[in-house]
Every structure is written in C-alpha cells, then in structure tokens.
Amino acid sequence: MAVRRMFAAVAVVAATVALAAPPAYAHGAPTTPLSRAAACRPGGPHAATPACRAAVSAGAAVREWDNIRVARIDGRDRERIPDGELCSGGLSAYRGLDLARSDWPATELEAGGRLTFRYRTTIPHRGTFRLYSTVDGYDPRQRLTWVDLEAEPFLTATDPPLRDGAYQMAGRLPAGKTGRHLIYTIWQNSDTQDTYYSCSDVVYRAPATTIAALPGQTEPADAPGVLRADAGTLSAPAPSGATVEGAAGVPVASVSRLGPGGWPVAAGAAAVLVVLLAA
Image (cartoon, rainbow, N blue to C red; front, side, top):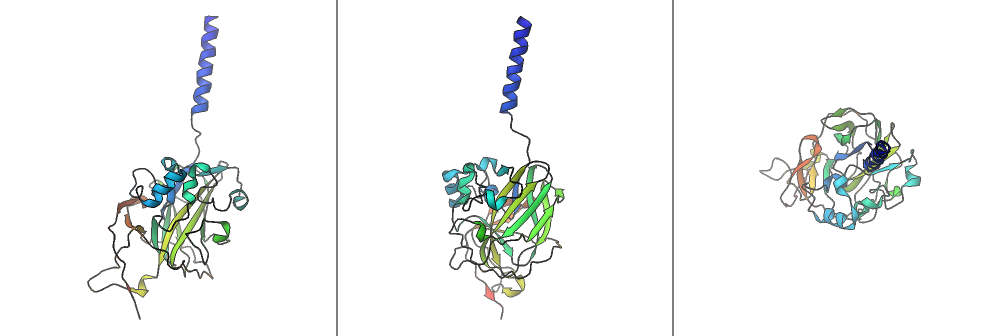
C-alpha cells in the first residue's frame, strides 16, 4: 500500500511539472530594423523612452519580447488579427505595442537601398517570413490597420540562413518613401502551428547621392531616437510602382548605432539634423 501511494504521489508531481513547464516553441523578433518589442525589452537602451514606458503601462509583456505568437492562423492573418491590434497580434498581453504614437524608436533607412534584415531567434524553427511596408498616406498617429499595409510583401524568405543568432534575409527596401513608416513582419512557422507578428518603425531618408553634408561634416548629423542601419550586400529586386510619402509634420525623434546582430548599443545625443539638398 505504501509503495502504491508513493507511485501515485510521483505521478501527481510529474503531471504538475509537465503542466507548469513552458512549451518549446519558436521565439524571435526583428532587430534590423528594430521591432517595438525588442526596442522596449528590459535593460535595452530604449526601455526608458516615453513610447516604451507608455507601452508597458498600457500592457506590453516586453520581458517576453520574442513571444508575440498566435496559434492556428494558417495564413488567415487578415481574417484573424483585428485592425488596430496588428503589432500585438491581437494578444492582450502586448496591447501596449499597438499605441498610436509618432515617437516610437525607429531605424533610419535609405529608401530603395539594400539591407540585410535580421530576425533574432531564441528558439530556431522553420518557416516563411513576409515583410510588408505601410502605404502612401500612412499616419503613425493612428492605430495600424490592414489597409495601412501594401497588399503584397516587398520581401518573402523561406528558411533563411541562421547566423549569429539571427535569421538573415537579403532584400531591397521599397523605393520612393520618405519620413516615418512601418515594416510589418509575419513569420509563419512550418513545423509548428504558430505565427509571429512584429512592428518595426522606420524613417526613410533620401538616397545618399541627393544629400550633401554641411561644411566640415562627413555625414549628416544624427537625429535623436532613430537607429542607423548599415547597408548590406543583397540581391532581391526592388518592387515596382512604390511611390509612398510619409505623413507631413510627424516628428522624428532619437538616434542610436546598431551593434553586432542588429542590437542598438547606445542612444545618441539629441541633435538637429540639418542637410542641404543637392541642386
């Protein structure tokens, strides 16, 4: 009888541990360009920014910045993820990431330029990435909806190479964009039923050939809250017909440099960006 009781107790403990253990699913989020969840992660250089603080107050489980995932979507993203809740994937634990603000930490990019997109993963899995850009007239002061995104992704990658802890995807940014925009990343796993959603705020600058620095400057001065992303060696063709303009009057705030793996390493000092357009 004593032996039987002992085995019963062991079975109860084992079942409790199994229920408490987190499932071994894929996890990850974009770091180039930097996603809102990764930017606001605890201990990160942007965690204390007004946008990240507001997100946490409104509800953003940024300690699990790599876990914005929804099961059994099966490609029906536009049907299952509600308008205004795209950045949170419709999950209440991340609703703070849906806040309509024009001061989210943003990555500065060159419109039409080449870039190595990096999606940091903490648990690797197989799957397809689809990256969408916001459309003409996008206003960051409004919650993101599906009509704010272009109908087709400007970059699609299936099982891209995993290097230095991040999936790396070669691609070309949409041309003709200026000002604040957003890149929406969907990662649909093929060996689990999970789909991940991420919002990366970006600021498009004109191609380098059209910008001249002030005398004595080797490059335009940094603007505060915008991350600088270096160009990589890429091969994806640029989308045709992309003529998108940013919302006029939307402020650009903040500057950092990106370190290895796409992580920002330090916030830049506040500065005024003054450039002269080449004649």
